[in-house]
Each structure stands twice: as structure tokens, then as C-alpha cells.
Length: 157
Image 1: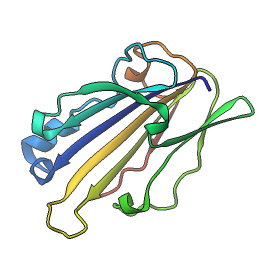
Image 2 (image 1 turned 180 degrees about the vertical axis):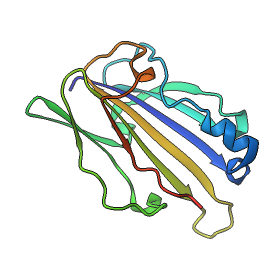
Image 3 (image 1 turned 90 degrees about the vertical axis):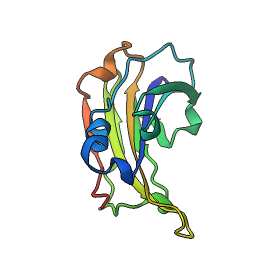
Image 4 (image 1 turned 60 degrees about the vertical axis):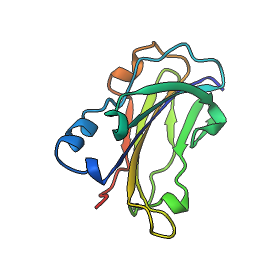
């Protein structure tokens, strides 16, 4: 399968729900320049409030990225997975998989709210942004507007 994947996870706590922390978080990029990524690997970027939302990039195995990728009739079908225990905020009916022709790409965004099962930890939050292209793309491709944008972010209260 010829695919280019960039997965960005931005994580925060109550401290960045409003004010300067939220402004800094909301200014975090949703796309980065791609480094040379080995086949069957994904470019993964993590940003967290504890270090001022500075990006930290790495490569991970494509199978470790929470997204379903399948080729069918010359198209790449893309559908991020949402596990039941991460289903907060409540989501309406999920959109279907996005079919991409060669050279097209999708930016798919989801957000989550999570607390410990025992309720002993404060809420934590994160947004996952998946930039996924059918085939190879230029290193700066994910800095531009996507062919398709799916925004499944909901209210986090």
C-alpha cells in the first residue's frame, strides 16, 4: 500500500482549557513538514502542555497508528478508529471512510476527554489529527489545505 501518514497528538489538562494555555494550544500546528519516512512507517508528532506544546517528532510502525487504511478499486479508504472507552465527547453517527485517489489527502480531526476509571485523576484531553495521503507527497504537502477535511471534534466541557 502506497500511503503517507502523519499523526499529530496534542495533549493537555484543565490548566489549558482557557486563557493563555488555551491560546497556546489552539495555535499548535495541524500539519508539519515531513521528514524522510521509511516505508510502512508514520511520521508521529506529539505536543503537550507540560513543555509549552513544543512538537516532538518520531516515526512509528504504520500498524500502531489508530486508523484503518484499505485499498479498493484504486482508491485508499481512510477511517480513524474510535475505541468505546475514548468515545467522549459523544459522537453522532460517524462519517464513512473517505476514499482518496492517488495524490489526494485527508485531514481528519478527533478529540477526546478522559479520566481515570476510579475518578482519582483530573480530566485529560487530547486531539488527534491524521494527515493521510494516497501515495507519496512533497515534504510540505501537509502544510497546505487538504483535499478532504473531516472534523469530528466535539464539545469537551
